Length: 173
Image (cartoon, rainbow, N blue to C red):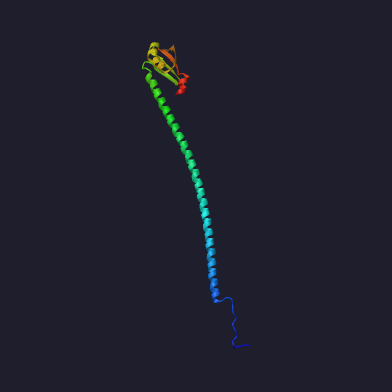
């Protein structure tokens, strides 16, 4: 029983509404995957940046430690140089005072400075000049003073004066 002269058209599942709904869900799913992939990429970049920042931090900590060590070394060198400068100044003053101590009539030919003593070689017109002008100041400075004399070619006396400080005094300085 046919009531129509035209043949019925076949119905398909892909109607206009279905196609619109499929396109909407396809675009939505694509956008979700794209957003997910973008977030994964950003997370990966963030982790790389964080690792690089941690590496830089470690490098800065190491360089800071190295600088601290260098500063400590330089400070030690400065302290050592100041100590040497102070000792040199004291030694210079001591030598200057020693030569100021020697009167004009006595001529020194050699002076040996030791840690705990002093040895002087020189020429004096006579033993009395030496005893009054040089021996008295030496005895006030040193604990032990020994002098020996022998004649020179010109009639004067050559002398060797050996002067020592006590060990306790040297260790206290």
